[in-house]
Image (tube, rainbow, N blue to C red; front, side):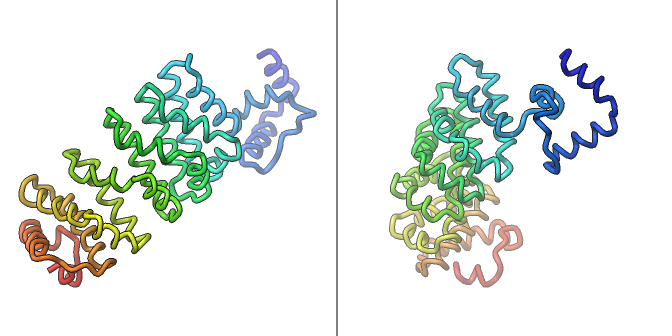
Length: 292
């Protein structure tokens, strides 16, 4: 602190200092290490993102640190990697192995936070998706989604898997190899409507990216599972939003795979249309014709 005060006295032109500091923060100028003590610069400007990311990963990897500190570190890390450059720097800084390892942490708060970090890093980021897959991150995420006892952890695992799969052809192939689609099918029969809603939406997004998946879902029975969801949330557990998302996904299967619409499915679609109304279900006339 004494050094910092002395430096401030020696450089008392506050307007000039403020301008220099702002320029450095914006990346328009670099500090002169021969002129300023690095510790003083750190105190004034704060730590750079790389240092903060490294310290966050060190914290969550430390078995002696508290869960509270790890949660704070994970929140900070997630904010930092919202920027695509920082997300790519996870690989450049060789941090992926340490992060992925903590998906198996004993504390559910840590597992949830790490899954959140993984999901944010890989979202719309092909480089991060590839790095994450290379380091074997998908399998532990699938383990969490399929088996974790904590609902919050499972939801964050699904968030991360969704971000990993979207616009990622090689990632979808790896997901299939690890039996990921069967894990998703189990969720189609779950009572957790929040997670089911997300899975239905994910299926639709994946088929839009990759039309071949629609044919796969017809052949493996997933298409029939969608129909069961439609019937359940039309006739038993009334849920307009679930019905809308399921109808949209069913329509994508039908149009992408050229699958025929059975009489049973046609009746289920008509019941949904009559019950909730065409305006609320957001399908246009031509789309209803495809289903009816």
